[in-house]
Image 1 (tube, rainbow, N blue to C red):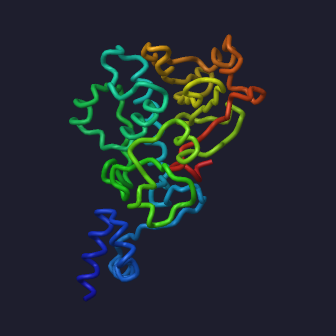
Image 2: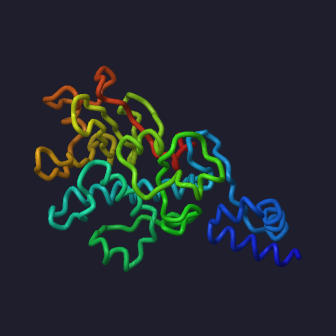
Image 3: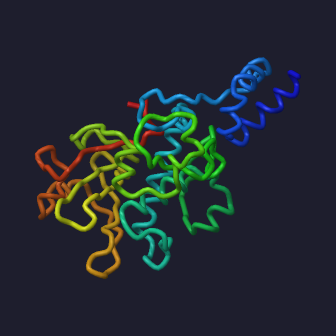
Amino acid sequence: MESALTVAALLVLAAGSARYWRHHGHATAAAARRSGVPVLSWTDSYGDGTPDFLRLADPADRAAFRRWFTLIAEYQAIRPRTEVPAEITDCASLLRYAYREALKSHNAGWFEDTGIQVAALPGDIRVWQYPHTPLGANLFRVRPGPFVPADATDGAFAQFADAKTLVERNAYFLSRDVRTAEPGDLLFYRQFGQTSPWHSMIVVQVGPQARVVYDTGPDQGHAGELRRVALADLLDHPEPQWRPLPGNPNFLGVYRWNILRGSE
């Protein structure tokens, strides 16, 4: 019986099957502990809707994610627009693309598929790689509330999330002081009166050469533009509502992905 339970535990961990876990979790967890197999933690330490097994607890994994996320996002802003993936049409789709691709295995096939070129390879995330996550391909939290095991299979996570959902369900507020941002953090805005009021930017570098990358999104039937802008220029933007300053009511602040939570 014990050997059978151990095999079951391995299958559960490999497949990330929340449904199986809910029905057989206690027995498989006990068997896994006896065999030395790590057990997924179906908890949500911060009550933000992200399960702890998705968080990048290893500092090396967090650093790898930040490097890939910023590299991938910035590359889209410097390549010819005709080479940018067709799915990137606004600020939210840029976030989703860079986030998903940062979590993949970056092998020769990945470079061929994406057309991305890098001078030096950041290390890959080791704890798990997309789409082989405990939640499969559904990376983004789309339902409010803290995580419970049933969320893994009942539609609480999806492959798509708009800018509002990304900021409210998948990232957390860090500060209204842009100087606290690290590479890979996000700047969010809410521009009242616009058809699509939620906007995001990616901080790709900090320090003297600090800069951000974002997609303007379509406007009056015209395709949006990918922009790579120095933070100093953004702070002095001719339209005050785009300045990332505490006194700007349109600037929501600096946000950080939930999977990085605990890295402050």
